[in-house]
Length: 197
Image (cartoon, rainbow, N blue to C red; front, top):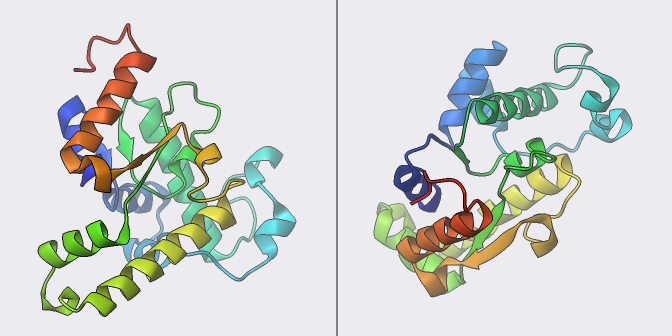
């Protein structure tokens, strides 16, 4: 929601689950396969043996990688390509890692306390998420999945402040003020950019 509102305020594209459709189309890998591997790490150790194929000058079709790695690399390529076309907002999918080295990449980690997250999910969801224990279980599993994916594919640690330009607690600021704070940061970082309002 914060990513969406930020992109809307800045008048730039927003990519979250939409990225899957773009990456699937660009790579030729069917969208259902993308969805089944989306932000899910693997137990395969092949990736650690091969390391980063980009450093060796390969692409996702150069040699026989497991399908989940092909999906990751296709999303990685798509993120780089979309960012090269102009400003946009990405949520998740190791976008900060894909854009490492880009001086215009701003990475933000947004977190909130459990009570705030619990209330938001219960207010925005169907009956399945009315039970507090189910919601907490869902939140913990989602966090674990995201952390495992990020830690597996990137060289950084999910949630570690050193991995991001800055971190914000949306339970203190609220959704809209968190968006405002990111925009204020952008104004300070890019004072010459008159498009940031």
